[in-house]
Length: 150
Image (cartoon, rainbow, N blue to C red; front, side, top):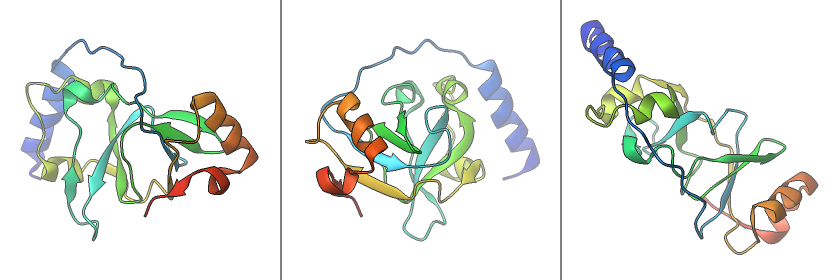
């Protein structure tokens, strides 16, 4: 990315603003392991080879489906995540302001701070509510009640 383009991109992030509502968790429940603050920073999907961004959230949706920390570096989200999900240097608040200027996948690739930020993903949709999953994660019983996602 050219330096001038990057500076314009960052300036637009800081100058934009929008109000976004919080949404409660839906029916799907994915539990994943990450040492990064996935509740604060934006997650994006990478291609299988890790060389390009394959999916990004819409800025208007970035404060929905915010992952919540359960226990022992395990997070819960209604968003389908995988081990190819990367962590951006942008916070959810910064990204939400970009409603009128959505960055390209190429631009976002240069803002990745961690390509391998998620090490395990479990589909725990039928394992119970958030409090139940918090207890299961603390006790290390995800393998017994959830299905591993590859």
